[in-house]
Length: 264
Image (cartoon, rainbow, N blue to C red; front, side, top):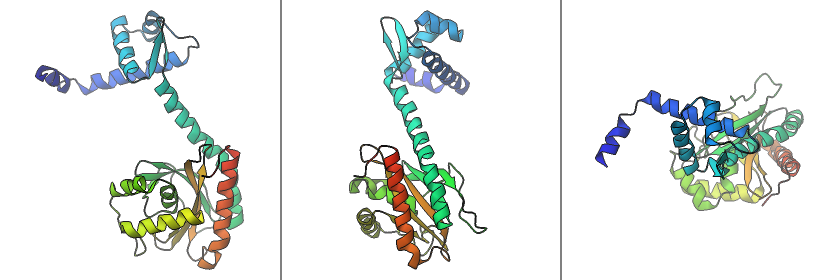
């Protein structure tokens, strides 16, 4: 056992990277085949020794990334699951965009689309406001769950223990005087959001910025993304919140319907 551990620690990083690269090329090779490939065919296609190819295939098979049937290797269920997850994200972005454009036209504010990734929300879509002073984020950037409209919206529909566990894995940093930094207050806020159907970031992440968000659901009634509008508090005034929240919730409902989804 000790010898194995020592051997693992001395494997050069370049060798590990090479193995990963070969494994990815192997998956691409199998993905191009409709009926599967034999060990000899895979090895020849990648210009690898059969022994190396067999070792890679067995490693991928142990994680269900490839499968073998009567000597023919093909893509496994986990490779499909990962590819399907990517397609789902692409689908929600494409389906949401027309409604995000409409939200911008209706409200004059920037519309964002975000998804839950572990203990944060990641922005995957945006249509900018035409206003000179507007909210802009970089696609791929993230926001804290407890201090963003999209984050609180997505948290609110999770089972409460799961939502609290996610929050406890993070520091509830106070970004502004309005940031919720106590679990009890956040729990109350999440219950309100679940009841009313939308969340409000009331200058909780950035002073002078408000955000209203609502969830988009898949066919199983699971929230797959949150759509929002964000703008300066001087324009997103409190008296406009009822009207703006209705527009955001309407957009979320229509994207959900366009995707064949349903609210829980």
